[in-house]
Length: 282
Length: 323
Image (cartoon, rainbow over all chains, first blue to last red):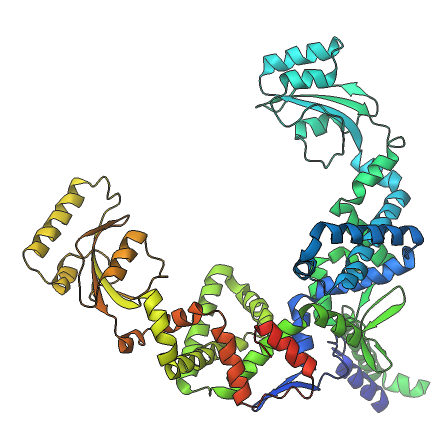
C-alpha cells in the first residue's frame, strides 16, 4: 500500500513536466562583455525566436521536404542558371544593392536560397495540383469565359442581340463595353475576382453557354462560357493555379502533414500555430 | 491476500478510486503538452520527414537573418545598464510610465490587455508584464546617457545646430476661429476687442491672461515650449516665430486656427536645456550621433568581443561606424 501511494505521489510530481522550451547547446557562452554586463548566445537565441522564428521554421522544413519530393534535376539547374543570368543582366552594376535589398549576401546566396527553393516549390505545387486535380477542379469549377460589362440596360440588350445574331463577341465588347472587361477569353474559377452575379451564373455550367443580360442592380453583364471541360483545360488550369498563393499554402500544408512535421519547443509551437494552423496535424 | 482485501475492503476501494483519479488527472494535465526530443545531447526544435533540426542548426539559420539586430539590441542595453545607475527618480518615472501604458492598453483592449503588452515587449527583448517598468527604466537611462553626452560636448554640438535650426522658447496669444477666411460676427467682435486692447498698450502677458483662447496654455503664460525649424507648426506661424529675436512679439498672424500674437521668450542655451525636446532635436539633427554615443561609451567601458573580431566588425557595420 505504501509503495502504491509513493507511485501515485510521483505521478503527481510528473504533471506539467512537458512543454519544453529549447535552448542552444552553448547558450551560456558569452558573446560580448561591457562593464559588468554580459550578452550570451542564449539571450540572442531567445530574442530571435520571439521576433520571427516561424518564417524561418517554415522555410527550413520546406527545404527538407523539397529535397525529398522534388530534388534538383538537370532541367531545374538550367532554369535556375537562366534566371540568375537574367537577374544579373537586368540589374547590372547595381547587383549588390539589389541583393542587399532582397536580403541576400551575394549571388550564390540568392541562387541557393532564392531561386532554387522557388523552383522546387513551383514544381511541388504542380505535383500537388496534378495529384489532386479532380478534387480541385470539382471544388473550384474552373472554366473559360468571355465577359462584357455594360452600364446601360438597353445597350446591354442591344449587345446581346448582336451576339445572338452572330457578331463576334470581342467586336461587340469593343463597341459596348463600359469597363475593364474587354470580352477576351479568360480562365476563371468560382473564387475569381469577377462580379458575384456572373459567378453565380457560370458556377455549375458544364457546357458552352451564352447568358442573358445579368444585372446586379447597378450594372449589367453578358457572359459566355466558352469551355467548361476541365480535362481539356487541365494543363492551363494547373499552370494558372501554380502561382496562386492559395494553392502554395494548400500544397505545403499537405506535405507538412504527410511528413509528420512536429515542433518540440513550446514558444515556437505557439507562434507557429498562430500563423500556420494547418501545417501541423491536429 | 484475498482475506486482507475482504477485511479492509473500504481502504482498498478508497485507494483504487484515488489511483484512478490521479491517473486521469495526470493524463488530463499532459494530453496537450508537446513531446520533447534531443539528439546527441542537443535539443531538437522540429522534425520533418524523419529529419531532426537541432537548436544549433536553427540558431545558425535565425542568426543569418536576424542575428545582428538582436546582438545590437542587447549590446545597447548592456552599455546603458553598465553606464547609468537606476536611481530612485528613474525608477519612479518608469513606474508612472508603465502604469500609464497599462491603463491605456486596458481601456483599449479590456481584460486581456496584458497579452498585448507582453507581445510588444517580446519584440524589445523582454518577456513578461513586469518587464514594462524595466523597459521604461532603460528608456530613461538611455535619455540620461544621451543628455549627459550632449551637455559635455555642447560647445561642439550646439553652434552648428543653432545656426540651422534656430532653437527658441515660444509663447502665443490665440483668438480662435473655425474659418479665419470667413469670420463670423462673433469672431470679428472678439478679434477686434483683442486688437484694440493690444493697440492700447496691454502687455503680452496681460493679453494672454485676458484674451487668449488657447485653453492648453492660456493659464501658463501662453507657453508653447521648445520650437525650432523642424517643429511641425503651420508654416505661417513657424516662419514668424523663427524670424523674431529673443523678447520680441509679432504683429497679428493669421493661420488656419485664427489670429496669433507670437512671442519669443528665450533663445538662451540654459533655458533651452530645460526642455527634453531640445536634446531630442540635437540627436535627430545628426543621425549617427546616438550610435556613436553608444559605441564611445562601450569603448570607455572596455567592451570585449571575446576574441570574435568578425562579430565586432559586423556590429560596427550595422551601427554605421568605421572600424
